[in-house]
Length: 71
Image 1 (tube, helix red, strand yellow):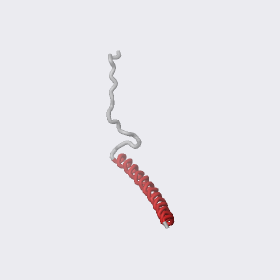
Image 2 (cartoon, one colour):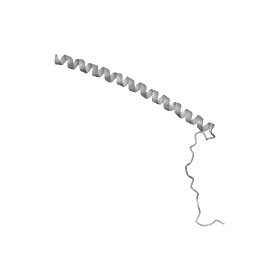
Image 3 (spheres, one colour):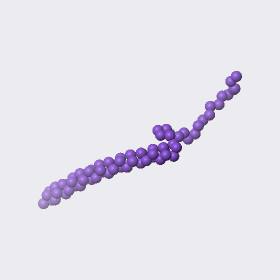
Image 4 (tube, rainbow, N blue to C red):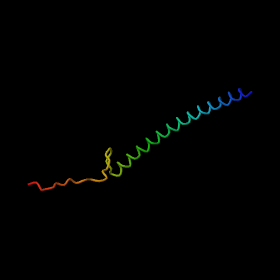
């Protein structure tokens, strides 16, 4: 009797693992779509607020100083 219950238990575990795999795949696909939409909206907001498309803003610019003046 114990072998039958063990077999049935393993069957349900494998079915549960399969269902969880499908659910995880669907969730990953939804996450990819949402990240794409957020990225497109970020570009649109940047463009509408006079940002430059495809160019990142520099956080700090360094000035080049010369040690002596050039004549």
